[in-house]
Image 1 (cartoon, rainbow, N blue to C red):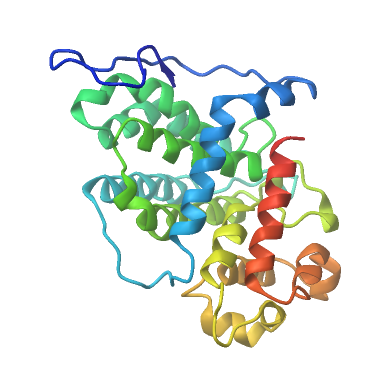
Image 2: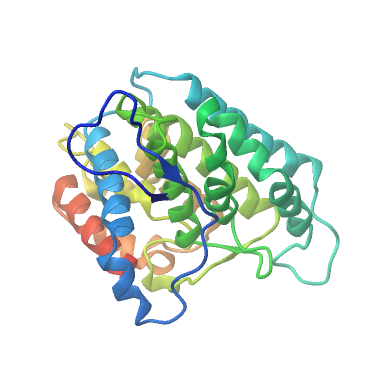
Length: 299
């Protein structure tokens, strides 16, 4: 968001910071443009947001107690609407096994309603931000031309949440709920999208990538498991341990989904994760995933 007046120091009582909202446009078209992104304030804000949430969930279970604000409840209602539209838009019969074209019908509903959905979440005095923030919501659910989904779309949802923090709809008190309630629910809806419409992985590195679709839940999920008294990284390749603990830990939820969607030896279809299982501690896993994410975010 472009802030026209945000200077350090005090302001007089009748002066209030003003923000000019604008519909985002694509600024990264070629590899050299990535340097501009990494040097930008937006990149610093985004990574700072990811790291703040990483710290907030450390050593905490998904099932722990935390504050749930009215805005969080509104976001859950928004995600429930997206899921309902999936149920109302079944896949069509088509020759191609992957990329069911009914997804485009589902996406068109979001394209038409996104601003209204976002406006319902925002404080009354921030309604002007809905057109700008809605773009990140629309970008977070996949590509309607290619019918694919990947970590870039996931990043758009994180940016969507970051924008809601920027305008004051979400606060520091909402950090746990942002990850454990909102982002976890977002993952559920995205997994349903992927399965219903057989979406292709966007920009997948195949066996050499961390995961076909997600990255952030592995970062935050490994932070949850730091200093766990019994679960070590080597245990996440044990299906019994995953089934027993996935309700408490986002990392294990991701592993469970992979086990459901892929067949064959884990070391073959998810080689990067298999290698991570040999890391001695969750703290080192978390640090390594953050380095990997920063490297991928600046490629």
